[in-house]
Image (tube, rainbow, N blue to C red; front, side, top):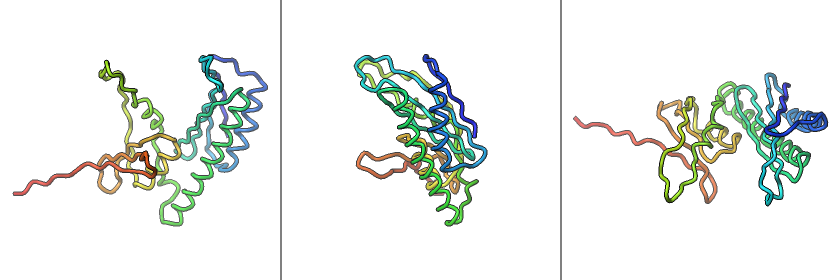
Length: 195
């Protein structure tokens, strides 16, 4: 397993690097399948009023699926521990769904992700009453998949919504978390011309 540790505007000491390899490496053993790569970014938020300024972002890529976790802590060691626990839970959830899909007829290879979904969160721009300008544009690759596979991806990435191409209809759909719990799906209306 390949674990890359980097710091964003902070120095990664040998002790922190060892702690990341120990905790996150142990968490990833839940689903120890090659190839698996893990990127860990350590950073501090510069807001003095924040009681948890240490932030750890973990991105796990396994069999083409992306699992992303971000955790805050009072210090970097606490944030690493919290992120490792969350990675363990996410990998267990993914492993359970892959096994369920295999028993239901789908193979693990059919759980197609799309690696750049993490960029979709950047599309959500807080609305300013005075400023309604489009300030950012993202280009994404759409992957054909079933609704169940899209639900797996939205859970693994931890996003509020997920855009995908329906494998049976070829149309673009969006699954999203509902405020009252559960999921919703947005599908395009297909109009037919009567002759």
